[in-house]
Amino acid sequence: MLRLLKNIYLRIGFHTAASGTLLHGVHARLLKMFHLFFPPPPPVARQIEIRAGIPLTRPLWSKKSDGYTAYVEGTDSGYIYWDVHKLSDRVVFDIDRAVAKMEVKGIALIFFMGLGDYIFTTPLLTALWHKFPGIPLHAFISTATDKNNSALIKDLIIHNPHIDHIHFYDGQRTEDSVQDWRNYDYTEALKKVPEQFLAIPLFYGYDTSVRHRVYSLFDTFSLARTAHVLPPEIHLSAVPATSVSLFFQRIMSALHNGGRGIVFVQLDARSTSYVYPYIDVIVDRLVDLGFVVISVTPLTTNKENRVFVVDFTQFKIIDSIHLLKMLADAAGEKIALLTVTSVFGSVSAGLGIRNVQMWHADDEMMPTMWYPVHHVIARRDYPALPQESITVAPPSEYEINSSGLVDYRADFVVDVFLKVVGL
Image (cartoon, rainbow, N blue to C red; front, side, top):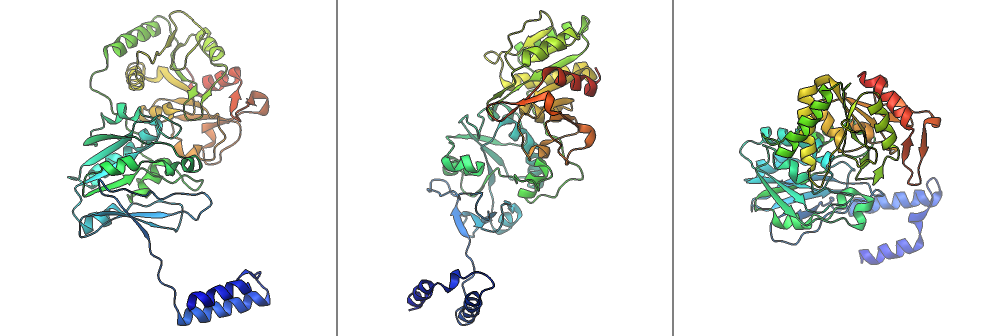
């Protein structure tokens, strides 16, 4: 009967009346009277069971929706639930709440991100390890390489002392994840989660209200923020590969034979498929100024004994990071980075090495990944950054390419680099 009356009412169309009209006032009064006699039921959160071997449905995120707030929960029967409430676009995992309700045998952290993004999570992993002693942390790593994920995460996370076990799963990008990265398909990971483990995808806030990526991660996992943003942690093997040691010796020999300093260059980015078009011009000028240059981006220029190109058919990405750490330990203030927006932004922050970054994409979220060792070249101002940490390029010093990305003039970039690093 109620459904019939509702359908008749909706057909009349009072509910569509514009605000401030007589019909809208009638509708509001009728709705209030109806709820007085038939109060609406309280909203029920969707519950997604996260237990190994059971088919799961992931919540879909839409930029057009009001978003969600998620809570990790447990029940007396030992099942793990992820309650999703349509409240806001922020995600909150209340692990304390789950641990208080049931025996939690471990936490399964599901990764689907780039290598640099993983490095930003390292302070969080350390904080979780300290807050929940005795609860193992398992990492689930997607084997796919796409615009959401880099399979290279495994080469670094394997050395993280706070991760007790690593699992791999077949993740994949979906049409929905093109619109919102959180919609990545990690169903295969959920199927592998051991019983009584909390299964938690590595989400974080991604909007202009976020002050810093690390703070956002701490907020997401209900951890207290630290007084200052913690730098990333770089975990490497105790002994570098032999090829790394030999490469290191060659570079240091070039530095000792009259080198002005070392410039480590990465001028391409996986996530945006960007390659800086004037890299050879920049390298040639740096070498002419007396620098020893190491590039992880392919070059055509060849300045003998002063240019070293990292060949990724022989080196892993972790080898290049290990090499950079060894050079920083040996050269001290005589080394700096020149990069686009790339993995080496987080690496340089973790190693404490000065890095002049060309922000080749106009992205409001870039300041959330800034650290004091970074100096930014951008085509516009970012008020969230300290004024001394950004150089705004005048329109004459850059072009917008066919992909909508920014190509800065080589001479301008080198001039800014020299002014900032002072080598």
